[in-house]
Image (cartoon, rainbow, N blue to C red; front, top):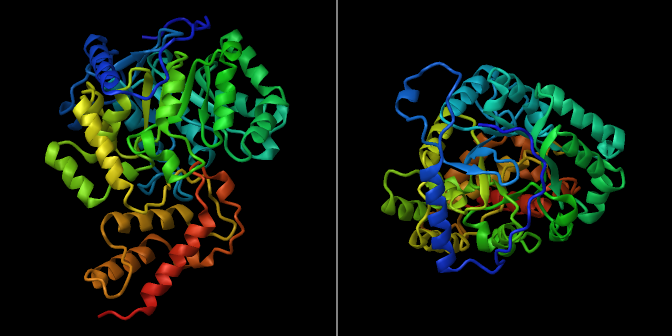
Length: 478
């Protein structure tokens, strides 16, 4: 499946960057369908046979070809940000250790069903993701999977050349490998934008160092993941002739396709990001196809519309089909904590049924309807954590969104739904977040907002939630 490392620069494509038209999308769907039908499957290896494995066929995964290396990459990529903990939750959510046995089982099952791209970072799972990923993958032949990791030098203490190089070499050690298939500059555009990017990668010579590592073959593909300041994204693409980016990781989903900037003026619509990559022939890696779970927990009215069209399809599968239907997408990442997440996604991508033009238009209608809801754009990435005052920021924002989607946010105690909505919010609030970690403890220090990829004004949202909770508690129950 994997070919000898090849660092031959790719030629720029000449595709138009114009907005996608009806004809363009039909062309996209046709290309994706042809790729699905024509690609051979990897030989599965590893893992014992389970009852679940008998219900899902192997050998039908959809693959895309990396134009620079010839890698046949599974269109479903395994995001290692949410490995399961021993308590059954995501290891990102608390202080519980990663459940290595379950990680091994997930990796075995994924590889047996054709998944070969695994994306991790030194920052994931409180620093333990690479170690767990390395243990699980090293049990399989090295040519049966691709490892992607990142130089996650977010903290100023890691901006020095020595510290960044040490982080890179530690990734190799934790992942139990002597080369990386895909290496990313992590989260360019975050924080102070260009100034932070230059401090992390330019003035310390780290980008030049990584380019030399690619030349030496220890990095087979070099790219970056983008969040935040669009000027940094545009700057790096303007130097593509020099750097020869092998891939770029972007946030793409059917809500962000045209509404990312409307949700937050400092964000950038996915349509622009994708088209800028496509016209240069740079493969796109897709993160946040579900917006941190928001597109699997959509408002009830949207669920009804999706189920009306495809009663047997999961709500999440619509978002994954959207992301996978674009021909210059190399893989779509999903952080899968439980086996049922993996199995559902395998059904979607084995093989992928690309969206028709009518389905594409339908999802854009659903996105327009979703914009009527005042949802907080939290993706549960937890980059805002830990809060120095112990506040559980993501849980507070996600509980608000959940109640909003279920119709349990009310404007007045005179609302017909007030009694039910009040109980749902307050009971769920106390169950989701301990009292000492709730929104009323926010002092507005704003140490969180600069780290948020979605540019949420977190203190303002926490104060809004705290005020809403206090209002619910004071108002009478009619």
